[in-house]
Length: 283
Image 1 (cartoon, one colour):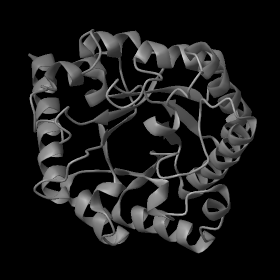
Image 2: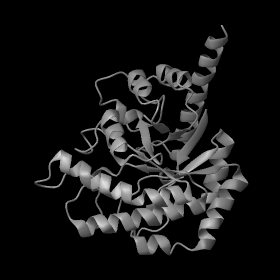
Image 3: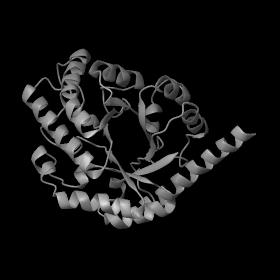
């Protein structure tokens, strides 16, 4: 398995130091939240992130032995952008912003863009779910040529009802991807989000095997894997069973007692589970 982490958990710590520290723990990938590069999250400012800074981040990750996996929290901390809005001008602005992120992702060496951002996809007043899907499909289909050009895949992220009211299950995300109808539009599964679904983790993973390109590891308690009630034995075994070849990326939302402690505890737990699965397959 390939393990990555999400950079925002380390706040404003120097990127090269974070890369070196996490690589020493066994991580080989990092996801970038765009707002950590420029808090003025809009297409203009994303395109104004200097080429020198983009190349420096890519070089710092490479020098530490890490690969930049891609981007996540795509629309977080933005304004005037939305995925399911009936406002055509807002949809055009969202398309322009996503194109800017696709360019940024490719220049950083990334291949995956995780589309979660619950606040920017919530159903707007008076908009039904079917219409919301059509608006989302319009936006996603429009940016697919840029994804093809830059070899970037958008991974749709189902989230729980506590966070959003649009795209709440893996099946609903797969349905949306089927409507977009592009090999550059796939699925991410997140353990915290899957915990809100009625089916067991292994069932969701197996049903999603043809769409799954990325995986977020965490716990419903907002900490890392192995730091809560969810056991990863079945989860990791099922990923191995379906020959999942993508990243397992640590995404947490509480940084207690500190990010490095969480990163260490999480990967040690995941590797322990992985080793146990490997032993059982030999036996």
